[in-house]
Image 1 (cartoon, one colour):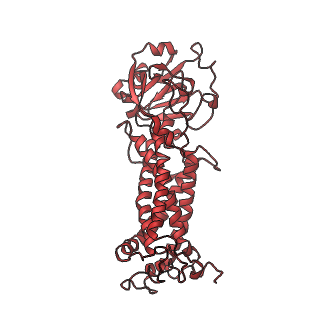
Image 2: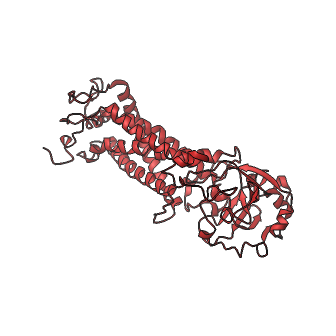
Image 3: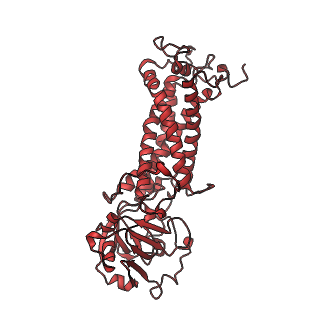
Amino acid sequence: MPRSPSSPAFWRSPLRGPWFTSVLGLVLLGGITVLFVTGLLSYAAYNPDLSPVNDKTPDKGVLGFYLFAWPTGPVWLYRLTQGLHVTLGIALVPVLLAKLWSVVPKLFTLPPARSLAHALERLSLLLLVGGALFEFTTGVLNIQLDYLFPGSFYTLHFYGAWVFIAAFVTHAVLRTPTAVRNLRHIRTPDDRPGRPVPSQGDRPEPTVPSTGADEPARSEDELVSPDPLPPTVSRRGALGFVGGGSLFLAATTVGHGFDGPLRETALLAPHGGPEPGSGPNGFQINKTAAGRGITAAETSDEVWRLTVTGKGRTVRLSRAELAGLPLHSSALPIACVEGWSTSDQWWRGVRLRDLARLVGYEADAAPDVLVESLQRHGAFRVAALRDNQVRDPLSLLALAVNGEDLSPDHGYPARIIVPAAPGVLNTKWVARMTFGDL
């Protein structure tokens, strides 16, 4: 019995082979492409070039390219893209683990490099495995609100994503043609339990030569054990098991993007339990007033004032004075980077563009705004909104929700609510708004 993992006979599972690995690889090719695109959309939703307070990835250089201002419609846009990003990411975990298991013998292959092409493939594989484990691990920890990181999640996940996707693209370019060829030309052997499996049954056909000049064919050949153990499950059965695991994870995660009974099925999401409280304010939150050090004394009607500045003017308004301004209503959801969201809540308050008019701006020319909260610590204590967000008639400084005053945890005495924006940009416990180009 060989004792070295570098020996092909060390790995005796009859499941490993180019067909099994190719199926998993093509699933990941599609899934990770969607994850990367939705991740870039999430980055764009913060309008990172608007103000440094919105971008938690310093010194990003060319990696932080930004193509467009994040739109305000449809109002469920961020709810869809980030919900898809998180749910799909969790659902792909079994596929990723199965793929890593299927190719683990290649990590121990000697010599480490047989040619320049093979060396490049091995390097991309190392970065791919490390990057995948890092990105999936940090992502899962973040949606569980377990910030067990040596630095900012935003920075780590951002740079980790670029390292991972570079290795992923390199690996995909090198391996996708072979994976497609394997699926077209290789039939899975009849490996049902109790049937013998020919040692060559899952090797490429003779039309795919296994020579030193054909590195992909030789690399795929290494996945097949020369002395496999008797099978206990077919390859199709193993894929069914992996797919079942993905469906289970998706089913126990997707509910965090819905209200009602379906949310109770989100067992693996950070907010799968009962909603906070009941009544008009009984919907999802991340930050509580107590957790951010907000006291009843500083939010009382006698003490709290909203300061609005712009064009050299300053206006200070009590909550009663805000309530005396023209009020409008908007039906908008809240959607957060952790993937959870609420259904549309009925908000009522003062339009942001009307507040800009108080300091001299025309409503249709309202500029960017910097919003500051009473909270004293935590990310996004200060957030910036782009002019298209300020001008949207659905964007409010909300005073009430669902027919009742905001609760302390939902931002009393006033909070921002903007269509299609990430939840952290809907600042709670607003104290100051500064209008002007940022």
